[in-house]
Image (cartoon, rainbow, N blue to C red; front, side):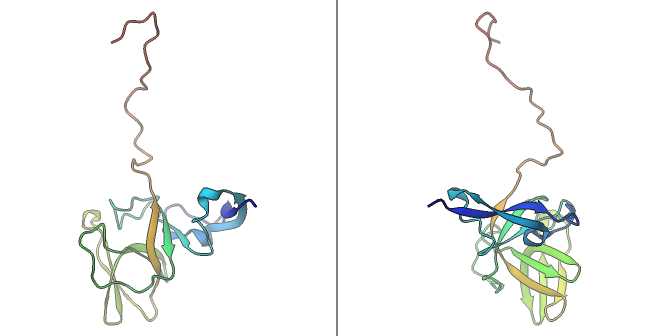
Length: 167
C-alpha cells in the first residue's frame, strides 16, 4: 500500500506575501501525493503558518518568509520552564487584524506578544476575550538562512581542466 500526504496544490489568489497568516487558509486546494517521508506534514494534525515578508517580530529566530508548523493542541501559554531564547515557546496568534507569531505572556485577561529584542519591534498587548486567540505553539519551521535579496557573491568555482594549470 502506498501512503499519500496532503499538500497545497493551488494558493488562494487573495494571499499576500507581506502578511503573516495561516497556510491552511491561504491554500485554495489541497491534493494527495505519494510521499512516505512527508507523512508528518499532515494538515489534519498540524496547522501551517507563514511569517510575512514584512513581519520581523521574531527576527533573527524566525526570518520573514518562514513557514511554521503549529500544534493546535498546545494553546496554553507557558509561564516558565525555558533556559534560553531558543527554548522559549513561540506561539501563532490570531488577531482581529490578522496573525502574529511570537513569544507570549498572559497577564490578567491580556495577552502580551513579545518580540525578539533584536527585531526592534514593540511589545503588543491584546485583550484575550475579544482581540486575540492562541492558534497554537510553533513546533517546526522551514526557513531560509540567507535572505532572498542577497545574491551569492562568490563566483562559481570549477576544477581546472587537465591542460589548465591549477591556480
